[in-house]
Image (cartoon, rainbow, N blue to C red; front, side, top):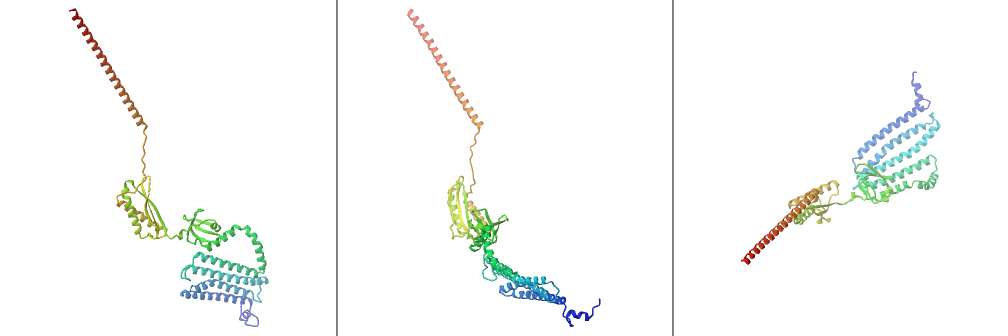
Length: 416
């Protein structure tokens, strides 16, 4: 088919005929694309210029408006194209597009406000808008409240736009809230627990916390409305319902002002004469150490007669609260204490124990030796007794022989 200029003129409205609706839609879409492109370029150029200023709010506003504004242009362009009077569209589609435009405008405005709230939170926590950065937990809590308010307001406006009665919805919410409250007691308890955590701020994101009541210890990563995420030291996530924090005690070591060194050292009992000088020198070393806060109490004292050592303790507080640096300081203190002990020709005691071992064979041998000694002594006594008896018998026999000799001599003399 060969098109002539006379055939084309009616489509563009150059003749007596009005412009064709397809051409109108094409022109509207082309204008929408062109306007969208130009707006995007202008906002990008404006954002680059505003980054050179010290005011962070203008950049935040431009960044928050860039995407919603582009979507709004497309929404308006499409809705205008659908509203062309002579367009051959279904009436239901036209009605739907009009309602969608109204709902879309509310949604885009809400989107813009949510991006503004997020940008304000980011500027406050980064310290770009204030001299001192705002606490992340506080800023996050306020941001969540504002976003919830925007979301609820947008939902009510959209319901009103769709033809629902807001008063009826609120009345249903009041009656149904009682039933929901009973059915979701734990959920509501967690929500109020999260609110209390945000208001009281016993801990913040990044704090190291632990509870002596339950097995909870780690670094806080996120504080939500229902639960708090804690990263334990073995890098596992721990999710704690917020209602738990209203029934347990929570310790926050991240807010400590000092770290404590409390160590006990023992020397040998044979070094007792040197102990007083050792304790005095270590205390002087503690008082002169650059990383020890001498405004806090510090002590080095002989403390106990141990099972195998004379024990004294070192008690002081470091200036740093950093865990890694604290252990470096503690290591230096203990090394210097060891050097002082060695300088006094003393030694650190180690546990010792003396054992008396029982040998059954040796005991039996000793008993046998005692028995043999008893037997030998008894034999010696018997032998001595026998010798004495033999000597006495011989003496008696010798005496009788002398008596007989004397009697014979008397008889001879008488006869004579």
